[in-house]
Length: 472
Image (cartoon, rainbow, N blue to C red):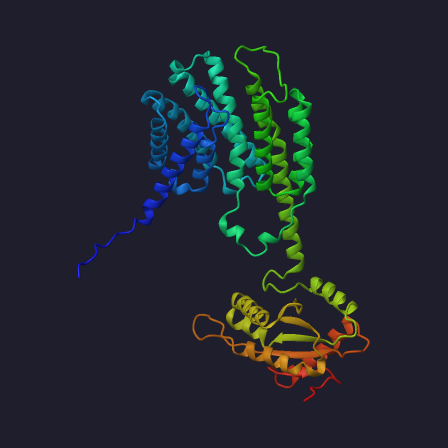
């Protein structure tokens, strides 16, 4: 049989550069084909997209990556019939904008670079302005022979388009969640309020119908409402949609947007682009502040609810939830267990507090793996924990408590030398079905008395409160 030749796969290290080249080629071709004949593009998002890609994938931001981007841009221009000289010079202008934005933003800490702070948003506006200045200046110096306009008009046209497009496009790329964040449990369950979005759509419609220079500011109130309601990524998408809609409406003279020509070369579209770009600054900054406040409140709520060492409920959170559980019991049985790690002080004294913390963490993890939804598990303090099991009668709870005790006993705590083994003593109390529920303090007190007996009778055992012995 003839032996088929082996096909070697493309080395994985070559794939990112090939993807970068292909992405640049596709974006540039799309931008060229969408450009009016013999005119600058109404939108040229290629530079902003590539700057965002390099900021999100720093490994490709090297001389080789920039060279690939430039070659792909020139190749796309030549493929569309451009002469080689304008293709070389125009794309140097584009590369200058990309490199400038990347250079300024890449030096910021990641929290600013991903626009999670107002400072990062302001820095982005500055970087976009610097990139637009570089591109416009290079265009005037190197590409002037191909323009019929004056140098001032050429500079303003390049600057206004580059600045406005970068300000609208880059925030979307920098705030976009990673694929891992999108697949995280709970990420798809977040609800989106429709009212701010509907108001924004209505305000955009009113802007176009009403017209005039002041109409570009009509959506600002709705965008601010969106900034208070949505994530920075969604606000960035809405700002891009709103800004693009207004720019197209001005370019098509749908808004009757006229300005006095006080400066030679200043056109209606240039003025509109710059005004719209600056209008989105406020909503983007507010979205960052609002998102930071929501994250802070979530962290504070988590710290107030969850014990930082073990991941169990804190004492205060347990008391609130246990009271609510007792209030809504509706004559169903309920069991409360008090658990105490045996000889925990000796563990701390002999092995140190770091090992003691490790014991607490593994003990809590072991118990949480044994529990079900709706069952409360909390750390009351030190090595003392409590579990509440709704629906389980206390006289039938010994099997459950024994299962928990054996799970703890079977654990081995890894440490230098001989693995450490721990045991737990458990006191069980509760209330039977169709009986008046005692208070939480009474349940804790009776379970604590049972726990005291378990320790007095040798530890590593389960004891039930008086009158709640196991029914066999």
